[in-house]
Amino acid sequence: MSARTDSEPHSGIEDPDEVRDPDEEYGAEDARKARWTATATGALLTLAGLAASLMRLTRSAPALVPAAYALGAAVCAVAAFLGSRGRTRRALWLLVAGVTVMAFGDQAD
Image 1: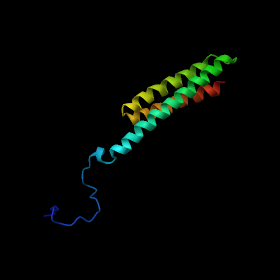
Image 2: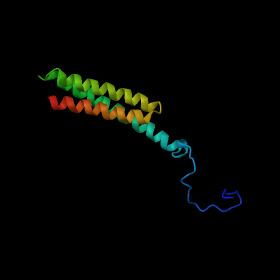
Image 3: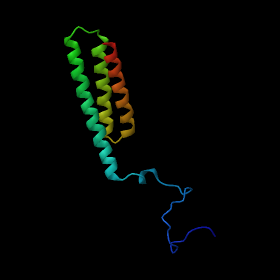
Image 4: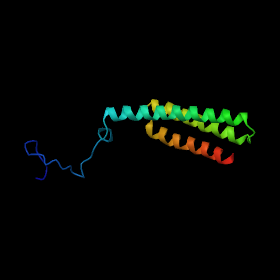
Protein backbone atom coordinates (compact mmCIF):
# COMPACT_ATOMS: atom_id res chain seq x y z
CA MET A 1 0.00 0.00 0.00
CA SER A 2 1.26 3.41 -0.87
CA ALA A 3 -1.12 5.42 1.32
CA ARG A 4 0.39 7.17 4.34
CA THR A 5 -1.18 6.43 7.69
CA ASP A 6 -1.33 8.85 10.59
CA SER A 7 1.31 6.87 12.47
CA GLU A 8 3.93 7.43 9.76
CA PRO A 9 6.17 10.46 10.20
CA HIS A 10 5.55 13.38 7.89
CA SER A 11 8.63 14.39 5.90
CA GLY A 12 7.52 18.05 5.49
CA ILE A 13 7.55 17.74 1.70
CA GLU A 14 4.13 18.15 0.17
CA ASP A 15 2.84 15.72 -2.38
CA PRO A 16 2.31 17.59 -5.69
CA ASP A 17 -0.62 15.29 -6.52
CA GLU A 18 -2.41 16.19 -3.30
CA VAL A 19 -5.49 18.34 -3.88
CA ARG A 20 -5.39 21.55 -1.84
CA ASP A 21 -8.19 23.92 -1.05
CA PRO A 22 -7.37 27.35 -2.58
CA ASP A 23 -8.72 29.10 0.53
CA GLU A 24 -6.05 27.43 2.66
CA GLU A 25 -3.23 29.03 0.68
CA TYR A 26 -3.73 32.42 2.30
CA GLY A 27 -4.91 33.14 5.79
CA ALA A 28 -7.61 35.45 7.04
CA GLU A 29 -5.03 38.11 7.87
CA ASP A 30 -3.76 38.15 4.27
CA ALA A 31 -7.31 38.49 2.97
CA ARG A 32 -7.99 41.38 5.36
CA LYS A 33 -4.82 43.17 4.23
CA ALA A 34 -5.77 42.67 0.58
CA ARG A 35 -9.24 44.11 1.17
CA TRP A 36 -7.86 47.17 2.98
CA THR A 37 -5.21 47.71 0.33
CA ALA A 38 -7.69 47.49 -2.55
CA THR A 39 -10.14 49.78 -0.77
CA ALA A 40 -7.57 52.40 0.22
CA THR A 41 -5.88 52.39 -3.19
CA GLY A 42 -9.20 52.69 -4.97
CA ALA A 43 -10.27 55.60 -2.76
CA LEU A 44 -6.95 57.38 -3.23
CA LEU A 45 -7.01 56.97 -7.01
CA THR A 46 -10.64 58.11 -7.08
CA LEU A 47 -9.75 61.32 -5.25
CA ALA A 48 -6.73 61.89 -7.48
CA GLY A 49 -8.80 61.36 -10.64
CA LEU A 50 -11.53 63.71 -9.48
CA ALA A 51 -8.99 66.38 -8.52
CA ALA A 52 -7.28 66.07 -11.90
CA SER A 53 -10.64 66.26 -13.66
CA LEU A 54 -11.57 69.45 -11.80
CA MET A 55 -8.18 70.97 -12.51
CA ARG A 56 -8.51 70.20 -16.22
CA LEU A 57 -12.00 71.72 -16.29
CA THR A 58 -10.63 75.07 -15.15
CA ARG A 59 -8.06 75.18 -17.97
CA SER A 60 -8.59 75.27 -21.67
CA ALA A 61 -8.33 71.57 -22.43
CA PRO A 62 -10.32 69.38 -24.80
CA ALA A 63 -13.49 68.00 -23.20
CA LEU A 64 -12.10 64.49 -23.57
CA VAL A 65 -9.41 65.12 -20.95
CA PRO A 66 -11.57 65.88 -17.88
CA ALA A 67 -14.06 63.23 -19.02
CA ALA A 68 -11.30 60.62 -19.13
CA TYR A 69 -10.13 61.54 -15.64
CA ALA A 70 -13.69 61.44 -14.32
CA LEU A 71 -14.37 58.08 -15.98
CA GLY A 72 -11.12 56.65 -14.60
CA ALA A 73 -12.05 57.95 -11.15
CA ALA A 74 -15.47 56.29 -11.41
CA VAL A 75 -13.87 52.97 -12.35
CA CYS A 76 -11.49 53.28 -9.38
CA ALA A 77 -14.46 54.02 -7.10
CA VAL A 78 -16.12 50.80 -8.24
CA ALA A 79 -12.83 49.01 -7.60
CA ALA A 80 -12.71 50.42 -4.07
CA PHE A 81 -16.25 49.18 -3.47
CA LEU A 82 -15.45 45.70 -4.78
CA GLY A 83 -12.25 45.62 -2.75
CA SER A 84 -14.18 46.38 0.42
CA ARG A 85 -16.48 43.45 -0.38
CA GLY A 86 -13.57 41.03 -0.74
CA ARG A 87 -13.42 40.91 -4.54
CA THR A 88 -9.77 41.91 -4.55
CA ARG A 89 -8.80 40.30 -7.85
CA ARG A 90 -11.56 42.11 -9.74
CA ALA A 91 -10.71 45.30 -7.85
CA LEU A 92 -7.08 45.05 -8.93
CA TRP A 93 -8.05 44.73 -12.59
CA LEU A 94 -10.47 47.63 -12.32
CA LEU A 95 -7.78 49.77 -10.69
CA VAL A 96 -5.47 49.02 -13.59
CA ALA A 97 -8.24 49.86 -16.06
CA GLY A 98 -9.10 53.10 -14.26
CA VAL A 99 -5.52 54.31 -14.18
CA THR A 100 -5.14 53.37 -17.85
CA VAL A 101 -8.18 55.48 -18.77
CA MET A 102 -6.70 58.38 -16.77
CA ALA A 103 -3.37 57.95 -18.55
CA PHE A 104 -5.09 58.12 -21.94
CA GLY A 105 -6.75 61.33 -20.82
CA ASP A 106 -3.39 62.72 -19.78
CA GLN A 107 -1.90 61.85 -23.17
CA ALA A 108 -4.76 63.64 -24.93
CA ASP A 109 -3.91 66.84 -23.05
